[in-house]
Length: 150
Image (tube, rainbow, N blue to C red; front, side, top):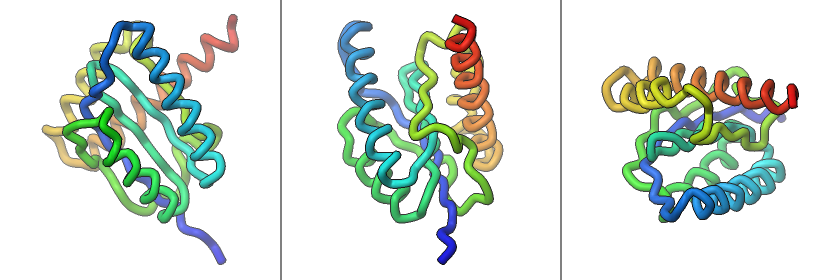
């Protein structure tokens, strides 16, 4: 039986607290757990933390996406969660990543991150979803190229 591909894109306000090292440590824990869980559930996606907000794309089997999103909604590190897109998709945007990450140190990206996050509340959902995916893709591609060049 062919399993349909499903995606959710959301933005939330980050409630991570602490100094830079504490936040970085918590992010490492979030990513380690997410990557392990997502790999076992057949999920892929990307996470951004910037401008005090999370933006995330999760994609995979509908039931797995829904289970993961229920955990996110119950997570006290998120507030003011806004679903930008939810539904079936033809292809994964992040097929090679159980959870790619674009962090707050994405050089020169702050203005674009701010603009995309502001657009989420002000524009049609389809345009906002496209911009969140595009932003994550560009930031992850930049960080991957930077890491490969080192």
